[in-house]
Image (cartoon, rainbow, N blue to C red; front, side):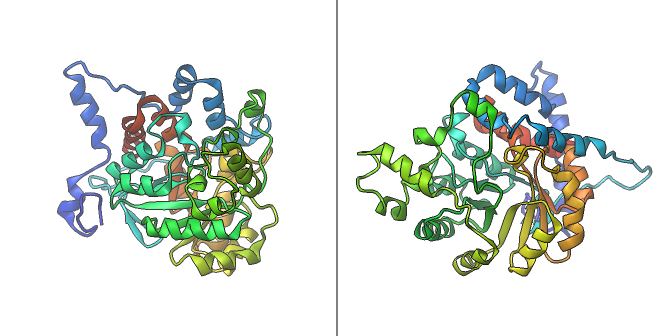
Length: 378
C-alpha cells in the first residue's frame, strides 16, 4: 500500500502523490515571501545545531569514536561512489514504495534508533515519532529513550513502529522489554550488537558528559517492573541507586551467537541485527533464523578505524541478500546517499543524525522537514 492508502498497482494512487512535490510547495510559498525555516541542504543542520544547543547535548549526538576516522570514512565511502544518469527513460511516475520485513512502506526509509532525545528537544521521542507517523515512515525507538515506549506508541497511533533493544544482562528485564514492546504495537525488533562496551568518545569525555549517569535516557528501565523489582527502594527515593542498577545491566559483553535463541523464543515478529559489517556475521545471523541485518558501524560511534558501512554493504548483500532483508545506516545525509545505498543492495535505509538535528532545531516540524527534504531529493 502507498502512503495515501491506495494499492501499489493502482495507477491513480501512484499519481496522487510524489515526494518531489515538496519542492514545488516551497517555490509556491516563496510567492508570498515565505522561505523554509530550516535549510533544505541537510548537511548544514549539524552546524546550525552546534550554534543553538549546548556542547554536551550536541557532542553526544555528533561525536564519534576516537578521532572521528570511522565517521569520516562513512562519508568518504558514499562520496566516492558516483551516479551515472541515463537519459530518455519514462520517469513521469516515480514510486518509492517498498515492502520491508513484510510491511508495506511508502519509501525505503525509517528513522533510526537514537537514544536520549530529550537532550535535543523537550518533546523528545514523542515529537520524532509523531513526525514519522505523519509522513508514513517507521520510527525505531531506542531502548535508551527519554520517553517510555508506551507513551511513544500512544503518540504514533496505528503508525508503523519498531523497537530497538540494547540487550541487558538481566534476562527478566530483557523479557519484560520484549513483552511491553509487543503489547505497545511495535512490529519489528532491532537488536543492536555493536555496543557491548562503551567506546572511547572524546567529545563526551572532554565534557565529562554521560547523560545516563544523570538519569536521562533511562525511561524504559525506570518504568519497567522487572527493573524496579531489582531495586531496594523506588526510583524516586534513591535515583542514584537506580542509575547504578541501570549501569550494571545496560550491556552484556558476554553475549554470543547461541544467545539469539532467547530472542526468537520471546519475540514472534521479525528480528533484525544491527551493526553487522562482515559477511560471515551476516551468514551467522541467517543461520540463527534472523530476518534481517542492518549494515552499520553505529555512525562511527563505536570503533575508531572501522570499515565504512557503505564499503561493507556489497559484501553483506552478496552473502545473504537472498536470505535476509539487508538494511543500511551510517553516514546518510542526502537523497543521493539513499540512492547509492539502494544501488549497493540495501532494501531500505535508516536515517539518524539529520532527523535528530531537525528535532533539536524545530521539534516535530523539524523532523518532518528532514524527512520530506530527503525523500523529495531521492
